[in-house]
Length: 521
Image 1 (spheres, rainbow, N blue to C red):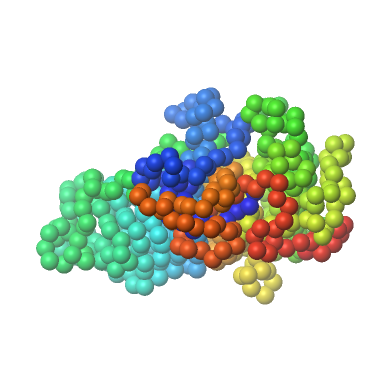
Image 2: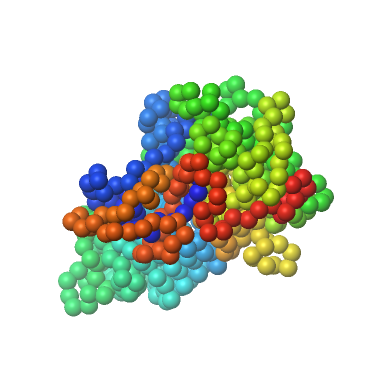
């Protein structure tokens, strides 16, 4: 599978629907076929209303809902420091029931925001300047602002819908409604300056608080609500999934392999060998296209130059003719990545087509670096997931000298059913998902590519067609090439599934290894 970005609006709508986004209905002949491989949820399971979900279809539905998010916390998400930057426009950021909190200003976050709780900016008393919420839409309960909010250099793009009231510590809502209205108007004006709209009932007595006067009617449209919450365009603004949780692990019968130890006082490369998909795997129901590995823990420390390579089969080794394999790595005691290994990498690699699998040793043999494919973050296909029930706490990954570009680089979806704390710079191609709180405790200014595990695939036979319906009543003649310059650039992540293609069709975005047997670069 190869990952790319979609460049036509109709494709965008189709693929958005595949991930559960609200889009207008489309005729069947306008939609290229989109599919996902089926992965059995077990040994993971969801809990709803205090009971385990036993229906497989419902479990997979909840899983696909969770996979819409690039950043998720069942409870709250905290952006606690300045210089936070994730511009990635696709993938949701959301919570089930807690707050989404931006402290200290200077944050950039792209994509839809769906908070089951409140959207909070730097309360109490801290600055809320230089925040950029890009693309939208945004849906939350309360809006919580610092006292006398007067934020500057902010962008609040998209449509904003707030189910509950607006709160700030000063002025006092009960005794100073006039000044309280002015504070609310400043936020509304900032939304409108960015071309957005805002729907709320802040003019009404609600949630035990008096309504604010002057937010509807009048002459100054820049500071007026666009409508009540009941008029929030539900087809455009996703609803919070207040019953969605991170799945738990049923560890009964699991035999845990020894920990993956990357703690030598030198540069070090360690490999997870992923076996090929066999004809026997494809006869199973569902097809066994995924591979599970269970380890006591993954520990990385002591030195720079640490790399965990995930060696995956190429199309030549897989019985289904696809490249790579969906791989889930379960860690009993978590992912202990110390900042002494501050430039560590987790890297997917497709082995050369002559490589052979040794069942007895569980390793790849006949490896040839010149034929291997080092997958760039831009080309990572969403086929790697790391799961633990332990809390994850990653300390500062900044390399010596303070260069943020030399920090850690991870490929894969990381999920914990506990708390997830990130304390400094790193780059991610995947997702970050917490069953409790997700906290960013320092600056975050690396690259972030939202790639859901088991990404939707679009069948490549669309490229042999010579026409494309961009409007309901008009077909455009087009030649499709993966290396062409975009016609209309939009951003939505997906995967193309290629069958029987050995050549690089990416225009040279892949690198290869420098050494067939030693440490890969």
